[in-house]
Image (cartoon, rainbow, N blue to C red; front, side, top):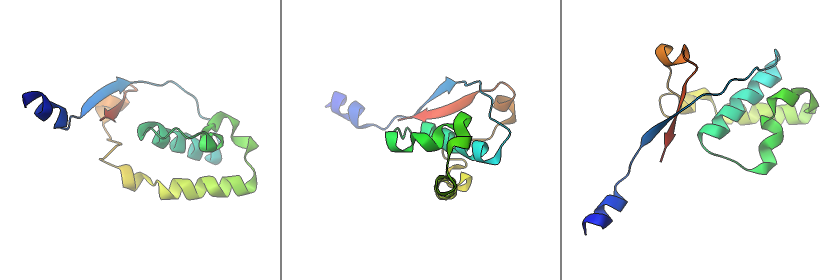
Length: 103
């Protein structure tokens, strides 16, 4: 019985990761970088959206694809994830550390 109770208990842990990157100085590239961060954080890994996550290749998006990207970023707005998945911390930001919740 004890093992069953242990398996049913929800556990949340934190994993320390860091990513060094440079985002091109372009608004579309910044949106793509944000969308990539969202997808990475929620562990959404569907191949059909890779095009919208490849921020280093931002100039390859068509006008209509850019509109889709904007709609995706509005749908997955920072307000939706603030203090749920994304936690602002000046102390952590100076060390370039991103905490990701693992379930």
